[in-house]
Amino acid sequence: MMATSGVEVEELLSPTKEFLLTYLMPEKCYNYFFVDLYFLHVPCWKIVLSRTVGIWIFLGTVMAQLPQLWRILRARSASGISWWSVVLQIYAITGPVVFCITNNFPLEAWAERLFMLIQCLAISFLIQHYSGNTIKGVLLFLSYSCVMWLLTFPLVPENVVSTMQASSMLAVVASRLIQAATNYFRGNTGQLSPLSVFLVFTGSLALIFTSRQETGDWSSLSTLTHVMAACFSCLLLGQVVCYRDCRTKNKTD
Image (cartoon, rainbow, N blue to C red; front, side):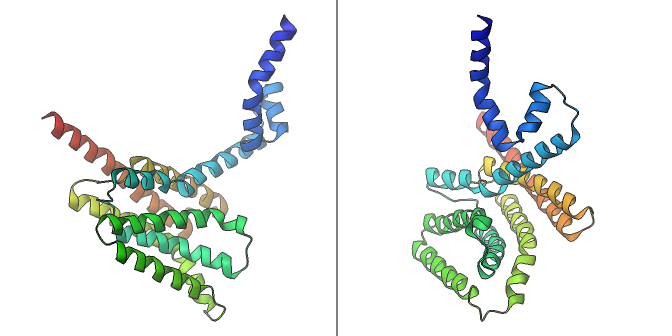
């Protein structure tokens, strides 16, 4: 019976072990933690923390706009979402994507940015579409495609692409500031997805951590821009909570 129960326990733990080994730790760290019950192995904790932050960044950046896209499609409305905020997000992603293309980086090195770009372009089009400006949305998409195509030409000076890439984080900060200002002047967050805002905020915190680890300095421009982006993301999250509470209070009155 004991042997049978041991096999059953092993089968029960197998999916968990597979998940941990695939995403969070190498097998030697699994053995330290769950076989030897040695939980003070610092190098293994660093590996686990690094991989956890990587997953955190993936969810907070790459996947963040999917809930927003779904919310717009479900409501058939993009009210409250600033088009200029989305345009700045597109600009922020375009620079790194063009840089990767012009330097012939393999697709797997920048596929997540391409996925983010597609999401933002879709949201930008839907804002125009649900505002009754479908033709304008199509023309803007075609114009962007032409500009993107021109930027990948060898004749484009390298400093243009590098400047776009260097200013991408400032564009992210400006994007969140514009959306926060839009929420404030409207007095509500419209179709802004709380889940997307939360994922963006947590992703910003993870980016601060990685930037701090890479530079080793809180005063570096990279870290400071990530901190500013996180602050405005926190402001957006606060607005989502505040305006939701206001709507709930108005309904009960």
